[in-house]
Image (cartoon, rainbow, N blue to C red; front, side, top):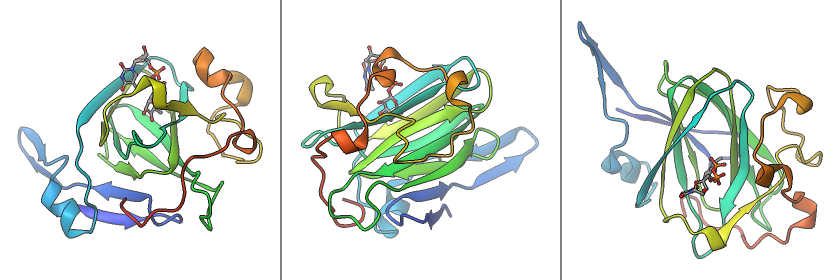
Length: 191
Ligand SMILES: Cc1cn([C@H]2C[C@H](O)[C@@H](COP(=O)(O)OP(=O)(O)O[C@H]3O[C@@H](C)C(=O)[C@@H](O)[C@H]3O)O2)c(=O)[nH]c1=O
């Protein structure tokens, strides 16, 4: 059975599927909706994404789509490893502005469930890291938004020196959380 572990911000959940090994290697059910439903996570994923980051220290984030196109994400590394981060940007949340992180490795198969109302980003820990994730709303460029990865108010403990991080131009220019009027309010867990 897949195990689900709530992190310090309990709406963010570490998901650990089972790998069944044999002489050939292993078999793993990487996503099984009935198990998520049984844990109380009712999400209908509609798009699968994959990104390749060649270097160690590539930072992608912190990203989210605004309502009504908000995305929950189920994230994993299929090659290499990432430091994966979720930041609570839900107005009225007791953990607004706080972050949690998990290391997701291809070797371990860990996954992170990032719900609506969170900004998401990651930093690669190995070269040629391939990240795959499921989302529950299709890509909507008009709703694409971001917060600065190194916003001092967030104080995320990234495993890369600020000057060494490799970023897109869009991510370098993202606003600070303080300067951004978040469209999210606290929703029930799993929403
Ligand atoms: C996210 C996305 C991007 N694109 C396009 C837009 C652009 O031309 C190219 C690269 O887009 P980006 O620079 O936004 O890619 P990237 O920086 O990898 O963005 C991703 O970062 C991680 C942290 C997330 O959480 C994702 O939701 C997503 O925002 O791909 C799609 O066609 N579909 C998509 O779903």
